[in-house]
Image 1 (cartoon, rainbow, N blue to C red):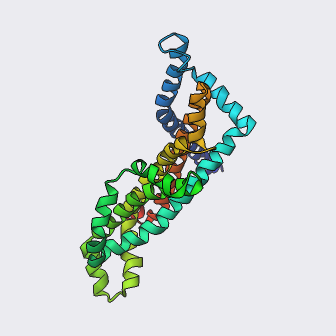
Image 2 (image 1 turned 180 degrees about the horizontal axis):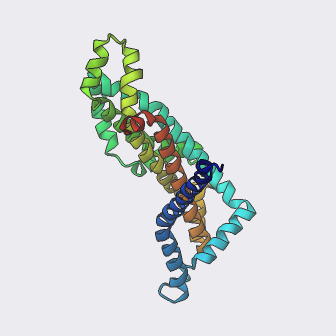
Length: 276
């Protein structure tokens, strides 16, 4: 006697895989269709004379120039210089800002003492202080890492402070009612509840670390993506200039994607709690 149960099981799984694959393709198309449209417009507009191709070359020429920089190794050298400066300043900002923000957000005395200083520096644009950093630290690596550190510190610090202050008071009262010591209260209640807001600040700082560094490299540097863009513009190598700009955009997208992935990992408890 034939086994009808097994004969109908395989098609159901196959149909599920087909639907899943189709959904993935559909999602990819939705996310990339506008970008593809802009790239096609970028290619057509200079060739049809809608813009001056001297100053806005077709995308194909920019892509060709970008690939030439990759083959020659120049792009890697500039990319490596920029990413190391950015990551070092960004990492220092995280190491300093999160503990300091937890202290200021939790202890009123620390907030009263440090809040005036924070208000002064948070309203001072990092690029406005770039000449000061160069005068005090020179045009070497120290000034560039320092300006990135300064620019990244305040988004992380302020979001950490707000995260601690906005933790649900019921959670804190419940933890205290169970006689949790202070360090366990921080570890089990304050820090987990603050992570989503802290990561918002980290993502803001991640974009700042790239933008501020590029501006600093345009002012005084011998390598880096900012230097590449500025050098190409001054020597009228326009496709190469746009290639550097595209590289910066891709770097920013990659950093944001990485930070979002880390946020989901560290905030998995929140995601799970929202599931039925």
